Length: 127
Image (tube, rainbow, N blue to C red; front, side):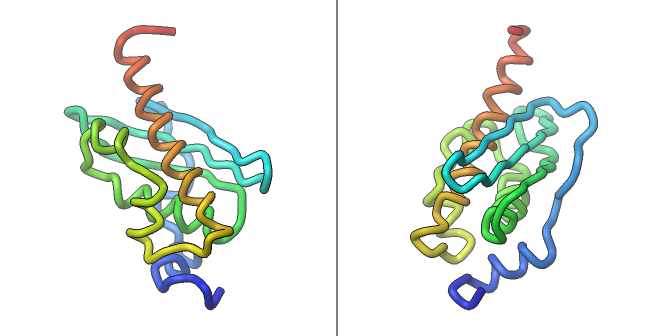
């Protein structure tokens, strides 16, 4: 894992916020059909801000690391900030990813945005 930043290695070896969140306010699952990585993210929202994030990821070490990192990064963010989150933001904040692993940050960004969309849909009372 020498091509990875210290943050990537740290979050892979010691992931944060992994696991189930009972009765989440919003949740989503995203997958990359090419490599098979899969991420489920669950959110707790308070006052239109991310209060808690839990995730479950099956994939390569950088997919696990970016899931962990992103879950810490967005805590306290407004829903609008999470909706504006990009893969580049995650990749840059974690110290960069090799070009063939940038898709890992896409998975985390897509899952977080989709979970916020799910929360907004639930809050609006839509099925």
